[in-house]
Length: 210
Image (cartoon, rainbow, N blue to C red):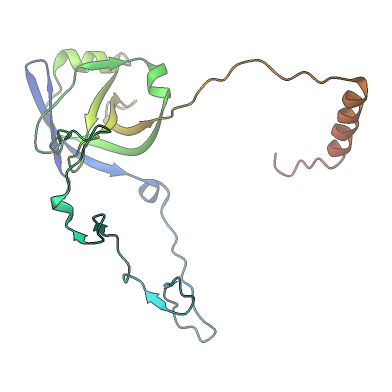
């Protein structure tokens, strides 16, 4: 059952159900089943570090231990910063309204890599000013946290061509610009060698990939 998010724009609020859109819904899916020589389905096993023990699927798990090697429940952990100070945990986006206030440029949007796509469905009309901006191509950036925590995701709200509202969960691409300088080649012999190498590689060019 789809979960609902509540948004606020200025003094107005509206709710939307999120519907995840993935490749399976767009293109369908294909399952590959591995069988042995007798046609029996194979099961995934994990080979332990001793090289002899086989661990069936579901037989491994992550756990937390303290410096003394003692088991620690996840609920007892407390997030801290680099100085050891406790970090404030944010609630899930489903537990509190999300303000829609920050409008960003298309360049800022393109600086992020989208990893999740949600279609926002609902009967509640959008605030008139927000709808007008979205129809003119505006993009809003909001924080989004599915389960809550100290590090919410970045999400963008934008309008589709047919008037549908979308939420795209993304992360900063963190692409660093180095510069335009190139290392110069010194010596005529080096240049000639490189030219000959390029010509030799060009003879094997295949156009099958075009």
